[in-house]
Image (cartoon, rainbow, N blue to C red; front, side, top):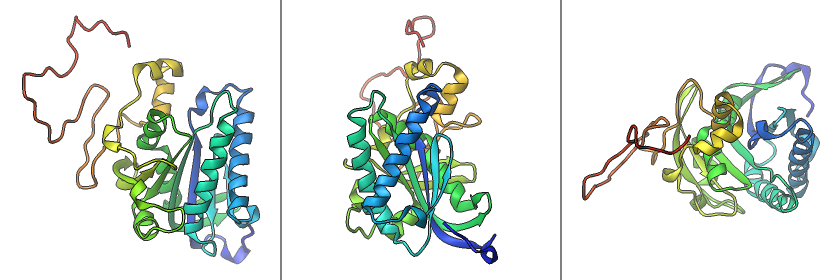
Length: 271
């Protein structure tokens, strides 16, 4: 997308879309070009089917994903509705024949975006990237073994999703309180083609997932955790944080004595 020199550094309100591939660290060097090619094929097919010209949007390569900004002259509802529908359908069909199905985390937010010769920046960009990289999005995609998970900001949900529209059903979204570098935010999550996800049941990856990643550092990267923090799960009114060996119980009544936690010396499970 072309930008005049006079516009350099000036903020404009645009839709920011962050796209990340699931488990990119588990692809070998030989497999990564194939993964990247599939990402671009599904994105460009969806743009074409939604009637959005490839040259009409700004697109940056992120190695295992793509960062996109869409100018205000293109309706946000078209991207949230028709484009997401086409993206999910193309990805679903392609994955039927893939040995390693591609999973995508997509996040959207509208806000001020600044362009320069190197790309785009701004709080709106940071928020969209943070939502796509959140552990809620990661765990939901993994837990449900879905092809695609969509996360939208609270403002985008309120202004575009909640009123509904063609291919946009607000009843299929569920909220979660998550912690990003800038603080706690509310985001809304959807699994395209499915009912609203039960985020209260979202859990951290099992020990087998950690082992498969090859190292503790790789496990942290795949989990989306940073500096020992965990995202909180709630109904929008309250949020809770729990580490790997903690559980959060809310509005729970135990009818008999209950032991919670590991029995040291008797727990024979291997991590």
